[in-house]
Image (spheres, rainbow, N blue to C red):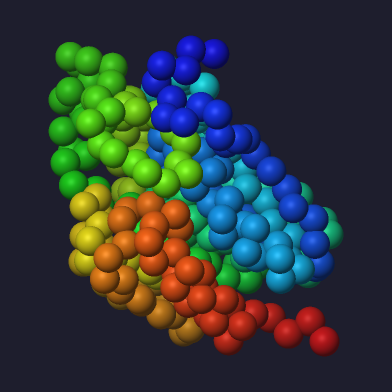
Length: 251
């Protein structure tokens, strides 16, 4: 593997499964990222006894050309597969995702009502400037983002593969159509400091899903990768509270 395109290649960004009790969580990373993005939340949940699965999405943690070669349906199927595996041993399965991962969780929940609940962090339903990807793909394969500094334990590509970004755009459109079918308890967490996703995105999701139990939380200073940001412990506390109030009773 050529690691010149990967930020912090020393970190483990592979798929992982943390076995626990009969309550399961599938945690899904975002576009260009790896499972390092959700590992801190996974470990927090596992410490509380839960089973946690974090799949590495196709085209990630290898080479940007691989991400340019996949379809959004490939990412979707990977999340479906992870949820299906957990259903074999767990009585309830929740989905949690950051950025594009949150969109995949929404799409799976819209198609599979047996998903118990959703936790959506910085959901990338509307991303600034992504519309330019379609035009730019005819001139270059990647858009450089190496100028962006990341002091967190984040592993992923230092470029945006443009054909992959077009697939993200297609996923956004599909999720927009599917959101009214989402009825599960849903937590949405966005941030005023997010330079990728606007506050209006959270409001749009909140108003579009059909869930009776739903909550929109606005952080003050979290970056887009809020699960690794300076307010991550507060985000984890909100997630734990929402789960405790809305989880299925197994007694």
